Length: 85
Image (cartoon, rainbow, N blue to C red):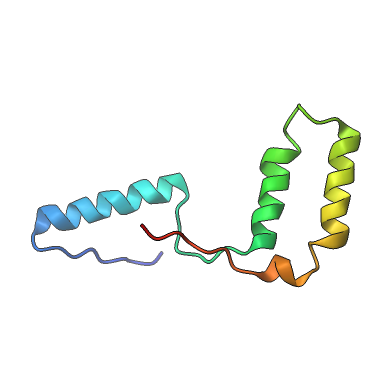
C-alpha cells in the first residue's frame, strides 16, 4: 500500500483534499494515461456487448471490424487527451 500525503494551509483543507481524492477513487478517476485501444476494449465489453438494442450478428460484425482494423493499428496506441477546464 502506498501512502499519499495531503497538504493544506490547515487541517481542514488537507482533510477536504483527502475526501475529494477518496470520492474520485470511488468513481474510478485515476491519473493513469488511457489509450484509445484500452478504452475501446472496455467500451466493447462493458457497454456495447451488453446493449440489447443490437442483434448478436451486428455485435459480432462490429467487434470483428474493430479487431481486424483498429485493435492492432497505430490508432489504438494513441493516448486519450484530457480536457482541462
